Image 1 (spheres, helix red, strand yellow):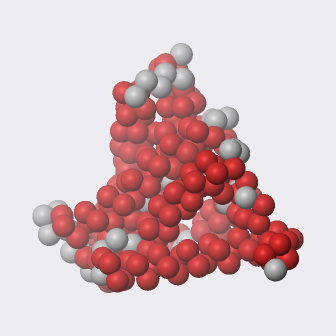
Image 2: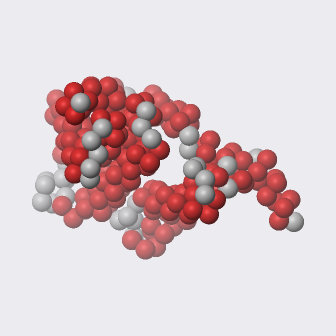
Length: 254
């Protein structure tokens, strides 16, 4: 019975991957509601669970693809690969209304660029502090500090190794969780109580899931404004990090 089930799941690996990820997301959002009353977003829990499963999958199989090295979960390697990732990024970009960005005005656009540069610089400095000296590693980790999407996209584009890309994802995940949990605590102190401030906040922070969850816990009416500039932040990061910022880092360290 077990062998038959594994054979069926392995034969339909991609469908199995979608089902497993769907169950993890459902459980994560359930835990988010029950444990933190929504203050820790379900996406943060789901990402953390994914990283833990990838670690134990790699330890158990001794492979290099994490949980995807388990035969009946091999579809996760395709589902989480570059093809579907890039498709998701392109789909997000097509869903953005340029007219909405104009409503943010110059402050929104400036906040996006500043947010990418500040996060990248902080991540790059942290990489150097931990002993990384090559431009590829520094750039990839710096990009990951922007968001956990910009990191892998940048690393893949400039030839980073899988362990460096994993570090960039971890950096972005930590940032996302911090934004989720800290936004409601500091919202009153920074005047985060109106659409204009939410637009600037989303542009500076950039992590869409973190901003959306943090604003939802602060004031649900502000979520669309912060998420709008945060979405553009990801696109700008994917554009700048593997090109201009990488060349700049290479010029400095080499």
